[in-house]
Each structure stands twice: as structure tokens, then as C-alpha cells.
Image (tube, rainbow, N blue to C red; front, side):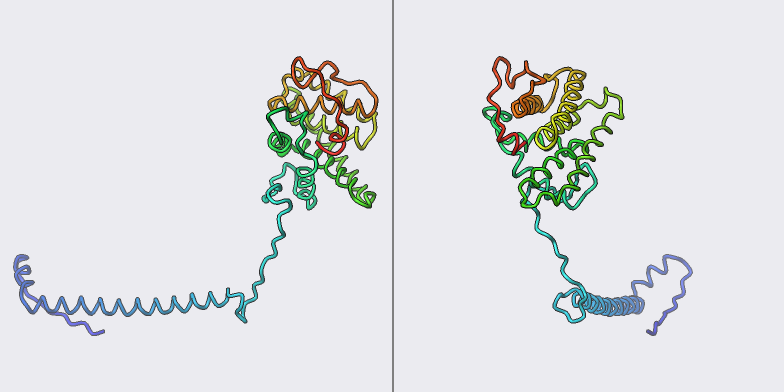
Amino acid sequence: MEMKFVFINVKEPKDALQLAKETEVRSHVTRYQWKRFAHRDKRNQKKALVASRDVNGIEGQNDPGSRSSTLEPIPISPQIGGLRVDPFRSYPISAQPWIPLLVDHYLLHMAVDIPELDLPGNHGLLRTSWFPLVMTDPALFSVIMLLAASHYASLQDHPNSMRLDLLGLRYEAVSSINRGFETPLSETINDALIGAIAKMASYEAMFGSLDNYNVHMHGLARVISLRGGLASLGLNGLLKRIVIWIDHNAAFLHGSAMYFAESSFMPGEGLPDPNPGHFLGSS
């Protein structure tokens, strides 16, 4: 683009202000400004056209119906059990492909409403109060997965096919509890560890041996004593009721003595009748 310059002679700065008012200077400046504006507008139009072509090209590549498209839809498996399973799989142990199935089975078939544990005016405490605790601790979670897997296997036509898996889960559950004692006892005896030992005892009462059950119950009685007794357990009394409920029903099934014979769910009230149906099929 050809640019024309106009030379003006001034001796004083104020003379330049006067010349700027003259028609020749003003018209030259105006012509130059309009040419710059027109040139810039054309460049912007070209850029817009190129950008439009680029966008259309990208859309064509991402269009599933395009012949040149190589993208395929990502299959997403339906979530097991509606909203019962954590979609982010934020479990306290390393993620395994069988965990969602067992979590769903536990919440649907085992963590059911149990009147002796919920007490009047409440329901679903195993799901709303107990299971959140389960999700915080590797040992407790491992024991619950062992219980869920054993219960799930008992409902299958060929449960023997899961025997090796159950042995592995049992080993991991016991190992996790033992690892919990590697720290000083003052820092170790929390609700999760007590719950893990209690549930491991219930597993032995249902699927294992009486000798192993007694080993876990002796340990449970010891750590609860170190903790300060049943009254010191958390979850607003739910953990205490779980321990007594396991003790009461296991003693009934095996014809043995209770470890917490003087305890009750509520002060001043006797223990309700055993509920082996719920004990074997739930909790």
C-alpha cells in the first residue's frame, strides 16, 4: 500500500498546532486513518474465515457419522446397585474388580434393618452409621468383604469354586487386623479396630470354627477393657450393641457362655431373644 507524506515547516511548536487545523493536513491524516482501518478489517475477515474452516474441520472429525471418524463410543458398564456403590471406588483398600459386587451384596442383603441393633425409632443404622465407619479402615473393610463374599458364596449353586478366593480374603482380613496392632495401643484401639475384631469373631462363629471364634472374642474382650469398657464404644451405642449381639447369638448357636454376659442393649433391660436367622443371614 502506497503511503504519502506531507512535509510541513515549523519553527515553533505552536505553529504545528495551527497547521493541523488547515484542510490539507487534516484531510491527509483522515485518509491515512481510513486506509489503516479498511486494511485491518480485511485481515480480520480473512482470519475469521480461516477459523471457521478449522472449526468445521474439527466438527467433521468428531462427528460419529463422519466417514473419516475413528472414534468409537466408550462403553460404560451400568452401576451395580443404583447408588449403593461408590462410583469413584474410594475404598480403604486397593481397588479390586470384585469389590463393587461384594459391597452391593453386603448393603442389599446383609446390612438390613435389625430391630435389636436399630432400637425403637431408628432404622437402617447398619447402612447409615455402621457402613461409613467400614469405609474408613482397611482392616474393618477387609473383614466385611470376607463376610460378604462368604455369604454370597453360600447362595451360589457351586460355592466350592470360590474356596481359594475366600481363603485369600480371610488371610487378608486377619493380616489387616494384625497390622492394626503395629502402632502403640493408645493410638490403635479405635472403633474401627474393635469392629473388625468383633466381625472377625462373627465370621468364625458362622463360617469357621469355635476355637477361632474364642481366640477373637478373647482378644475383643481384652481391647474393649483397655479402651474403657463397652460404654466407651462409639457410633452412639451402635458398636456396643453390635458386640453384644454377636456375643449373644454366637453363644446361642454354639451352646457356649457369653463373654459380656452382664451387658444389655439398654440400661436396666434384659437381652432380647437370640435371632439366629438375622445373625446368619445379615449384619
